[in-house]
Length: 358
Image 1 (tube, rainbow, N blue to C red):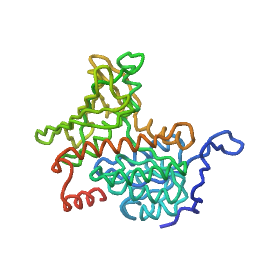
Image 2 (image 1 turned 180 degrees about the vertical axis):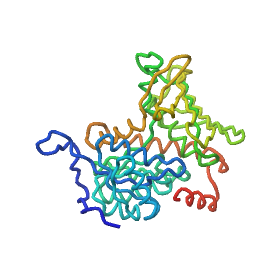
Image 3 (image 1 turned 30 degrees about the horizontal axis):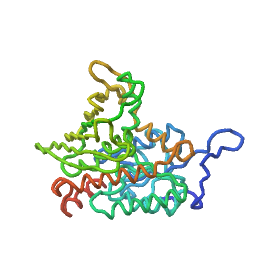
């Protein structure tokens, strides 16, 4: 397996506001992709497609091993993304000629790969969440890493997509602006049941909460109800700026696992509803509907990828504090739930990791 070119000097940011000589166009960002398979509904292939659409170059790919990386590279070539397979993510991060990396691998790899990317001086798009939320030291590690990225002016972008639909929600309900939020409800269908639903789904709820109420700092009165595989979690969010005349924000998250696409999803703000409809027969087209109204929407994953590239170019603010806040809120929620809902024994985790890496 060939090595991909020479190593770029760490700590330099040639793409932040720079332009190709004589062309007046931004210099193309070279991106490595970690976790490019669709095992358990991974986002890697879709992230690669959106990066290519945005004229970034996905030049390197790594998965759980050399053989699966070769399969992933062949699959990506089939969708017009030509990249070199690497035998391990560690070697890709250390040696590939890239400026940024998209970490779409399982949760337990996020913090280790973030550390390696920081050492290399790479911008990062990372799947959510960054940590497991199971222990206070998780947040401490995130805070330390994000501070280091900020000091070096490197982008960290967490791939939470739902906030990019808020403008469509506003148009769907013919609002001049989004209202002050008193109630937020989300209905999601994670791909797998049990404790694995929480890291897959809760970051969406939290990102919507902090996008609409950015000064939220704490959660309290965490409740849950489990019926079969379905789980409903409720909590009250508060903090300076989070309250309205009616008081703090009541948040409800209803999770009903569904293994196959398309998965139902919806959210409500103060009782105003937006239900996502996916047309699989016509190229995964999305729309919102509510009480007879309907609005076509763009894939929010594409908007998330565009925002990542805009942050690298210095055209969109890096939300370092929002990342830390979201991780903190996630830890508060998970820490208030019984272990039977949030964790599994070591053997279960080992089985899950083995499945994720096949």
